Length: 499
Ligand SMILES: [Zn+2]
Ligand SMILES: [Zn+2]
Image (cartoon, rainbow, N blue to C red; front, side, top):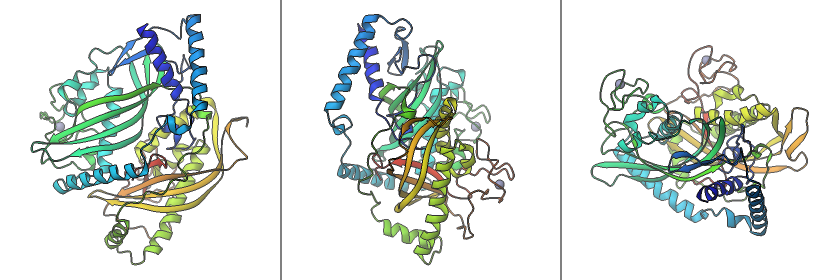
């Protein structure tokens, strides 16, 4: 009975995931309410229970389904469908009000300011890169010997976490969003930083593949007074001492330099991890379309944006802000937006490799691969940008970030290679807005020449040979870190943007 309930819960979780989503890079396709479970079962009904991070075999329902069980499943589906039709959508997805979101964000902003006062090297962008690397490796290494490589970045307890785990492997880890929860610098010995991670991954066990959507809270610690490492040691997991790729023994000895890395002594380490939600994902999301949410919401602007503009102007000796803005809006924001969506739509994702951060590129490559597997296309015909609003400017020692709210409209639909319509509409214009965060390394000279986004910003060669890692095939420079030009770091849907 217990396994039955467990299976039922997972099924209900799966149904919750049938909430359709808009099909755009960084959009609903990569939110927790979407995803895809491909492979043998294909139904999104998982056969495996999830028990605080340990997967346990939960019986093979999808292989040998009892007729009564199928009937019950059907009954539950019908009931859920009826309930969903009866209740307003707000009742299913309660979101914090705008006022609460702004209040929460302003508390976190103060905490970040306090952290930056004691650690001038701290960069939100670099920290998010660090979390991204650790999260991806935590799962992909989970049951492999390489898990010990992570020893300096995990508490003693978490180092043991997967020891009793089943013989599964995890891949296709996609992080959709990382949200700040709390930054605590008040303690005399340590500092802590908590984030909420919204991710998907595929679990392979006994020949079955199941795609999960998870929501986890990770809390990092380090000793008080530690200064953050620079980009080279934050953008990939590496030895905080020598900078070599992280190859550690269980005891935290670096393979390369032999030093013992103490947890929290030079770098953040993960102390606590709480899984808030795990849902097996349904298989139809590529063609499921829902009403666009959030387009009507008021724009969330940074408090003190005018001051940030003046500061940015001073830093870059910009005498006329409007001049700069016009060039930036047309030459960068609109050009990037249109090029990225065209590449998405035509399934030519590698052609915009140099315009995207590693994280954004990888996350959406996963979805592009799924479209390719089915030989489907997500068309965005007549795409038109209606408005670009500046909402935030943030700078730290290493990076500057500009966030914009972009309003656009298009005919958004999915079709197969023969042109058969699978979802969306060719007749009804879909209007939407998204918050885009563009970043580049701080201290760069502004590019005042007409800017061609089809060129390598470093050597000027055609940007047609960037490979998977965005290293220009002509000059060898890595472009996606924003060292030579702007890259899109983050795309956030308007209904989840918090400032
Ligand atoms: Zn080392
Ligand atoms: Zn180049």
